[in-house]
Every structure is written in structure tokens, then in C-alpha cells.
Image 1 (spheres, rainbow, N blue to C red):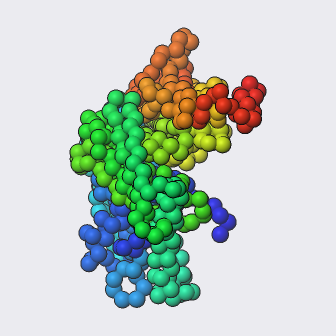
Image 2: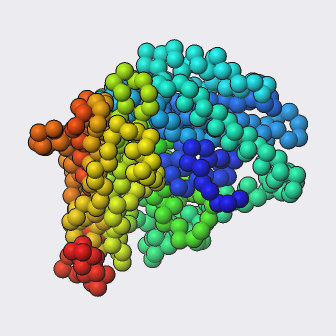
Image 3: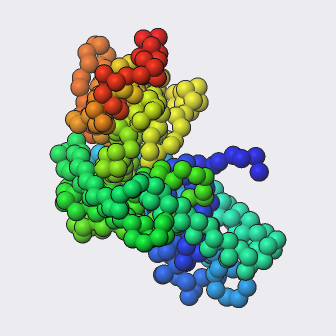
Length: 507
């Protein structure tokens, strides 16, 4: 009622035929709520009121293992479920070889943590606590901080129960037939809005064929061909095909992206083309055909490591799509994942993503020091961070001057974050755009690559790679400089807005 958005436990109302609500604050969540479909397929005949299920398997529609989804059926008239409520939350740890469950060098999904597939969490309103604890602990790389994991899962259970209550209230107020009808209207409106946006993008053209290719820091490529075509009276038959043929094969490392993550990126980018305020849902994808070749890094085998696919590759998929559509210069293209905890896994683990520069577009400079595209998580307040984790001090957090690409419209600047460790900790960094800079668009210059460093107690700076797993000693500091966004348009065409950005840079 007060408009607060709870990041740890958001609610989505779904049926087995259509998704009617999706949260657009965390873009990666848009297309990765599909575990609901898997749960329905496996349990529909045995579901009863008071049941809930738990899943995190990225190869069954999830994102990566730390994102746990709790799902519950909603019953109204008759025995069959008519809706489903779901709550997804990112957990601080779900096991794996490193604290925080984002191991930079994982080569299989089992090294990333506990895989949960279709677990009946609650049966007849009773939490299966012993079975849940066994599930989280009986693993080669068990979940850490079990009490916190159980508490967070209980919070998600409360969220889905709230969803059931609100769904019941909606049905009692308007009637089941009306609620079903408006679900269809919402989805149809999204599809119609997407077709209209595609029609507007084509302008006078009947068809457009677009393509773009970009490289991950590993050298592996993501390629896309986009075809948009009219076919009859506007805008009802305007459709698009998004084909990722030409993308590199499955990687040995962890930057393979589950298919649901790729779909989430497509949904996000094409939603940007709709110039009206609509409830975002799966109807936006109705006019869009997505082709992902089997065995490529965007459709890997079930055993593939994927934790970096959700955080890093998703950003690069977005870059490729926006490059093909020529919407803007590339944004920072990474989430700059930073994780630390005790070497033995005891105590608390900390995980954050770090803001950077967004790409410029026609008529607008890029924003500086912001989360971009597939993430929208907030930085923890310094006072809260240091209170909860007294083993560190945040020595510096500010903009990285002149890191945005120049252009008629300038790319946004990245940030510099310096964390000093007062006690020894194991640190992981999972980042991109350390080798290949964010591209500029329409003659704009690229933004600067990111940079990771270790400051030793002697004061010497040691360069670190984009993927890091190491012990940081007491007195040492980690310095992460995030990429700037790409510029738009030739710098020679700089207008008053661009000059204003330049003056702000000097200040």
C-alpha cells in the first residue's frame, strides 16, 4: 500500500497459460520465472491447498543457483489450481566452491552450489524442515550459514502466502470470470503494443535485416540477426525474428547463459521500444520469434556452469541486441560482481554489484554511476555495510572521471570502489569489459574498459584479471574501476547538451 518494493520477495501472479505480472526493476527476472511452468508440469495432479514448492535450477527456467523461487498454487472453485504465486529472491549463499556462490572459475553447475529441482517445500501447510536442511547440506559443496538460508526461504513463503490472500481478495471483489478476462486483456495489450512499436521502428520500410556481433573478454562471441517485417494491415502482422546463430559454442567456464536469461534480455530490449506505459508481461514476446542454436553458450547442456551467464553474459546479450537495433552506445556491460567471506565458509558472506556508466543515445548523454540494463540493485549504505561487516572499510566510492566515451552525446562515467580488509578474507570478482571496451554508436567513441587491482600493504598496486578468486590479507585493499558507457554521434557534432556534459566533467 505504501509503494515499497521488497527486493528479496516480490510476487508474480501467473496461470499455466500466461504470465500476467512481471517486475521490471530487476530486468533479469522478466523472463526467468519459468520454474513455475516446470513445477506445474510435474505436480499439477498432486497439488493441494497448503502446498509450496522450491526450485533454483537454471536449466529448468531459472537464472542462477543463488536465485531461489518458491511457488504455490491458488485454488478457488473446484480442485484444479487456477493461479500460481511465486517469489524469487537472491540468496547470499547456496553453496559452491567459494563463499557467496559466484565462483569465477567453476566448470560445472555443481561447483556453483546446491541444485534444487522440484522440491516440495510445504505439504498440507507444514514446512518440511528436516528434508530442507538435508537438501541444503547433503552436497559436495553445501550451503553456508544455514540459519540465514532457512530464514530467507521462510520470508519467500510469507510472500507467496500474501500473494494467495491478495488473489483471493481480487476474485471475491470482481469475480473469477472478470479476473480471467482482464488477464487476457493485459497480455493482448502488451502484444499489440509490441507490434505497434515494431511497425513504428520500420517507418516506411517493409522489412529490415539487422545484425551485430560482440566479444566476451574470453574471446567468445555473441552474434545476432534481427529481422523485422510487415505483412498486411498495420500493425497487427508486424513481427520480428531474433536469431543467435553464429554465437560461440558452450564455454568451459561459467559464462554460459541459460535460455531463460537470453529470453529475458530480448524481452527487456524490445520493451524499450514501446513508448507507452504498459504492464510488462509475456505478451510483449508474442510477435517475436527467438532462435537459439543447441549447444551454443546461450543454450548450454544441463551440466554447464552458468552463474556468470546470469550476471555478465546477460549484459553482453543486451549490448548485442541494442547494437543491432542501433538504440544507443553500449553501457558498462557487466555487473562487477564482488563477493567475500571467510575461507572456511563460516559466518556471513557479502555480495554486491557495482554501478558504472550507461551508453549515450540520440539526444541524451549517458548517466554516470548507475546500474544498467539487466540489474537494478542498490549499493548498501556505507554505514550499514561497515556495521554488518566490521572486517572491511569502504575507503572510496566515487565517479571515474573521463571513463565515458566521447561523442555528440557523451557516455556516462564508471565508478571507483576501494574496499580495505581489516581481517583476512576470501574474495571473488566476476566482471566483464576488462578487455573489450563498451562500443560507441553512430560515430561515438567507446567507453573505457574496467580495471581490477589489489593494493598491498606496501602500497604497491597489483593488476587483477576480470575473474578473480584469491585470499586478501589484513591491510590489503581491492580497487574496482568500472567501465564507462559508449558515446553517441561524432564528437565533432557536439551540441549544447554535449558541451554541458563536458563542463560537468571538469567540475
